[in-house]
Length: 420
Image (cartoon, rainbow, N blue to C red; front, side, top):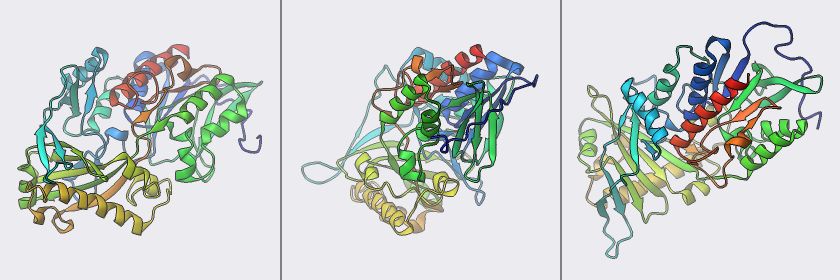
């Protein structure tokens, strides 16, 4: 086991008087909420670094752009956050007051493809009064921007770096910190405390995607700390509902045709491949409409070998991706969309083709999205002896939701700041 993890015997804070360093791994909602809570509680007494594999913050509430066309800003993860608790709504009201969020009021419909006569049915859906919907303004990734802006102090941001090795720093048989390295063995970050806001570095799906043992699982086995090992085991046992996502953009007559659809979010019922169609308006001065297609869970589970060649997992992490299979998956999702909309006389065929799109169609796989199963409880998520804590939609209540990720990040960030 010692060969698997090369724990350093040097503490990163051995003789230094600099503030304690905390690294937050993952720049989604949970990671940004944790970083903000750390800085609100610790202020300039802490050094906080936020590490994100992608080009910016957002995670599943992210917004995809391109240098080739400044108008492209497509929310290819969640179109909105569903919030059920007063604490969650308080977070979003604060974001709204500061201009980072607003209530989502786009019309939602149920699009049925399993009718007796074979013709699609379209019915409006009602949101229960116990649920409020919020989105980022003007794009979903602004939710994370707003969380970070809530503190006077700002974290150091590290984008485009994939952590493939997580090693404990040990002095006199005690964990004093952590060292994070990339695939080439270069140090990405050293810290006194580590916060993990995404389950990927722990979960067995890491092996399927990137190869090798999950880096934090390897470190936990080496340390033999009972609390950390129990947390890792709980996370590893959790499931997830993967989603394959196709994203594209239209302008001009095509954009106008998509705008005429009665819905902005349609839940598709009765199709083996397609589960959701999202129509997102571009900026007011840009004649652009974005369309995002979400697959069914069964479809995504049958395409575990496809991550999308333009995705972060493929670009930065080297996740396996077959060009032929990628095109097959895209075509299946687009065919399902055409069956639903063109076949149902909701959209003319000429506006639902590859040629009509000015961006895409591109494929993205959300493999860690929507955690399910017995969550890691809050009291299990703080491993003080190992100087590590967990937050995310796999921790505490509201499993699999943006609200759960935000609440767990804020709670754990405050708890860690109080311990340091």
